[in-house]
Length: 178
Image (cartoon, rainbow, N blue to C red; front, side, top):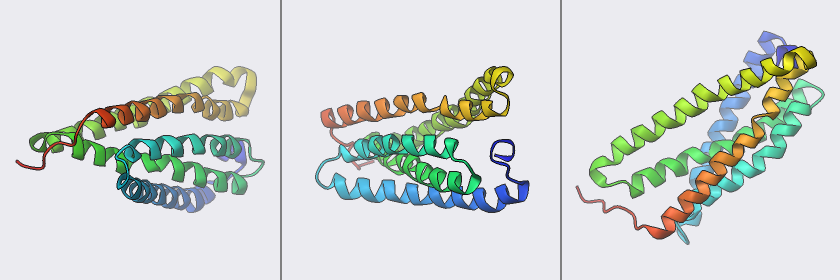
């Protein structure tokens, strides 16, 4: 953001850190609240709410990357992060609900490990590789292309959520007995 939007380190730490934390927190809460409310009608909500929210996030990512200044970019990033943050609470609820009671904690741990390995491990690697590839021809704009190259990857979790919805419709929750 310093090179692309002209921000200072102080601005990034003061604005983006707080905004990203709040947006992600609100998204986490909204994902749980909406999924729980809609799940009263159908448990498919635990998969459909995150899929829809991730889809809503896409245009806001594009707008954030293409924004002319960091202030406008920040507002769009806040919406994108809020929408993309909705997946975690429903995902954990699905794991805890459908895993056998004696294995729910292990299943939850495996889910969080895999989620972090992919998101925190492979995400920055992919972004950096794309950015480095475009750097020679695009200069500083290569960072923007790296961010935009992440958008097609949103198809993966959306597809996963639809697969989860299909599985939910075929299986009953695990019994809560030990």
